[in-house]
Every structure is written in structure tokens, then in C-alpha cells.
Image (cartoon, one colour):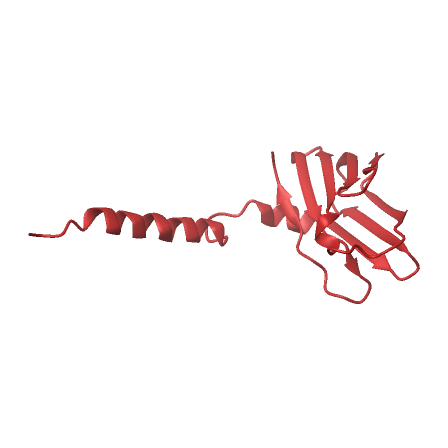
Length: 135
């Protein structure tokens, strides 16, 4: 009796395409966002986080920034293409900075509505990746 090769081959082709697009092999429209926006959130031993945002195109009309995972969520709105915010943070989190992501909701003249997400990192440690999305 002959084996059917169709389903395994189809599964292989789908897997290859999925990996291709997930690893950025397809057209990545996020390169333009990476070149335009900068965000960093640094924890300093003096018990505060410094969050900086820069839109190199200077076409941002508003930004809503949230720090999630806190007892009371920190939220603030900005109407500029650049800001630095100092947020008191008494202790490093017991379960790591991943539980306190920084999320920006950006309104941009050229790109429309954009979201950026990153994590806090202690001063002197590598900068975590930024996730760019267009909802």
C-alpha cells in the first residue's frame, strides 16, 4: 500500500512560509518604525525609572504612555515628539521587569495609530527589544 505524501509535504511548505514571515524574511514594514521611533526605560538604583521617547520625524501628535503591572497603573499623555519622564519605583520587581511593560499608544501624521512596547532594564544592562505594531 502506497503512503500518501501530500499532507506531510503541505505541512512542510506551510511551516517554511510561517518561519519565513515570522523571522522577518517577508517585507517588514516595521523597519521604517524602528528607524523613526526610539524608546528606552532605565531603572536607576536611586529608585526611579527614566523613560525616554523620541520621534525622529517629529510628526507625533500625541502619545499615551502606560506602565502596566503596577498596583495603580501609571498613565500619562504627551503632545510632543520627544519626552523624558521620571517615575518613582521603590524596588526592583520580585518577578523581574517583564511584569511591568512600558506601552506607548502613538498618533502619528504619517503612520497613523502605532503601538510600541518595551521593558525596563537596570542601568548598564542591555536594552530589551522594542515591539512595534499597527493595530
